[in-house]
Structure formats: C-alpha cells, structure tokens
Image (cartoon, rainbow, N blue to C red):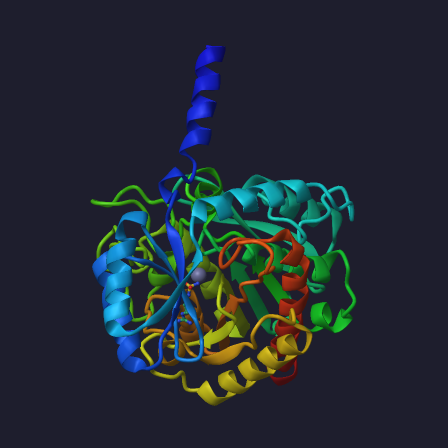
Length: 420
Ligand code: 0X9
Ligand code: ZN
C-alpha cells in the first residue's frame, strides 16, 4: 500500500507541467494592422496560446509548442513580423517559479494567518483565511456563494460598517481568478482585503461604501494550475464533448456567443449557454442581489497593464465617457507609484484596444449594475536576471503589485462614494 502511494506521488510529480517541456514563449512585434491580422490567422491555424496580444507599440507574447516552432517562425519571416524567443523552455521557468514561491511560504508573520498578500496561497488556505477574518472582525462577514463544478465552496467577504443595511451607500465588488493561471491577481485582491480589514489607513473607504470581495472565482481551475498544468485558464467542467473546461469570462449573459470560442478545445470556449457554469452563476446571483446600488465592479486579471471597459462587442455603454475618465484617473494613480521598469497602463474599450470578446464578467456587471465596471489587466512584473515573465510570479513583486493596484482602486471607489 505504502509502495503504491509513493509510486502515485512520483508519477504525479513527474506528470506535472510535463507537456510544456520545450515550449517557447515568443515576443512578437507587429508594425501595422495587416501584420496583426496575419498573426491572428497564425494563432488560429496553430491553436497558439496568446499570453498577451501584440499591438503596434506594444509587444505581445505567444506560447508555441515545440513541434510548431519552425513552421511558426517561417510564417512570421514570410510576413515580415519581428520576433524574439523570450523564453526557450517555459517548463524551466515554471520550475523556477515553483522554487522561488516555495521559499516565501510562511515568511511573513503579520498575524497567525499573515502574509496572504505577499505570497501565492492555495485555495484551502485562502478559504480558511476568509473564515478567520470574519470570526475576528465585526465589520466582516463571510458568505458561501455556492459550489464550483468539482464541489469547492466559493466564498466571498462582505465588508461593511453598517451590515449592508444602509441603502444609500454604493456597493463595490472586486473579484479575481476567473482565469486560473493569473496567479498574481490573488495576492492583489487579498491586499485590498488586508487594507480594509487588518490595516485600515483610509477610514472613509469602509465608512462610505459596502464591499463584496471574491478572491477565487474559479477554484477548480486554480487548483489544477497548481497540481497539473500551470497555464490552465478555464474552469474544470468535464461534461463537454472534446475537451474539458469553459472560459468563464465568455460564459456570462452579455452578447453571449458572439465573440468567443464555439468548441470545447478552445481556450475561449463559451460553454453550452450563458451561465451554464456554476462559477458564473454565483457571480450573477451576487450582482443580482446588489444591482440597485452597485457603484463599481472590478474583475482582476493579468497581464498587460490595461484598464479595460465594455462592451466586448465594441459598442460603448451609455456612460462611456465617465467610465473612460475614471479609468484614466485610476491608471494615472497607479502609474505614479508603479514598478519603474513597467510600462504605463493603457485605458480603453476592450474591443478597440485588444480584441472583441463577449460574455465577460465585467460586461455583465456593466449591464445589470449600470454604473462603472472594469477589467484590470495587471502588469507582467519582471526581474531582468531571470526568465520569469507573464503569468509567472516572481515573489519579489507580489507586494508591489498589491500596493500599486490598490492606489488605482481607491480612486474609483472615492469617485463612486462621492457621486453615487
Ligand atoms: O480575454 C479576456 O477574458 C481578458 N483578457 S485575459 O488576457 N486576462 O484573458 C479581457 C476581458 C475584458 N473583457 C471586457 N472588458 N469585456
Ligand atoms: Zn484573464
């Protein structure tokens, strides 16, 4: 029995991220719209994993399977598209990330549960942390929103000095990890919780608004990205023909199915219908409960340094101008204190700055809340001496990410508090 257990452990350790061995991350620079178009075609032909979309002036990153590399390079050369191999073997970078992150565990002792915003913690630890905060602080309540496909409890915090009874206050909702592999978003959201619960330096933020914070929207995908495949994006639904997983950020009822993946093996697969997945139903239900006084909704993703707003079809919401201006104020606030080597944030409508994408959480929140709704794409923090980039988290930057993003969040929250 013991031998079997050891064998199982060895096999699972061996299998982890093994299929990524030899895959390369390409840095791509497009000069004009034609090149961007050609690149999109290549992405579709090779089913490439676009980590961030190249724009003229902004390099993109694309992961390419070992066996497709030669072909891909030939096509890029033919189209005159500039590229560089940024990371030759992504598996090595993933191993390095694991090594660096494991050194940080328990490094901090802010409280018995300290350091959640300085580390990348697993689902179980975060789950216990949320319950612990609710036990320890009067203005915090923990709520179970429902269960994920694999049965994990999706918990969120309600933070309020008036127990959500004061209907004149706006509600601010922050949610993260809809996409499993975007690990940096978790400590960033936990930093916000820390500043509203354990280290309150801005009293007005809890006096003037009610908060809903849901740190792990896709717990199954998140755990899978730790145990099996570091670059997993979707949830872990297994009830589709073809492949597992739905892109939860294409599964909301906001022009559902128009600009998204129709087939289960695509990374942007929208599911069988709007809200087919339990994880998106949970966010839908929270929004529906608070829609009459929703002031702000933030969906935290990574990466690319963007503050995006709807709609994913390209059409603008009725209050598009205000949305844009508040977005720019947030971006400026972050840029003032950002990690110096990073680029400035870019603010705009998702379809005009990146690509059309429908069924997104922030579009749905924009529609039902009719207020301010954004998708944050956090920066890819990078230390030039190692090969960690994009979704991979260098612990050196975790706290900075939380700190600078919080500077941006505060701007929109204060705008909402004053104008609600
Ligand atoms: O494509 C996405 O789902 C988001 N980018 S990511 O690289 N994190 O996958 C952007 C979605 C933004 N959608 C709307 N604002 N509607
Ligand atoms: Zn994302």
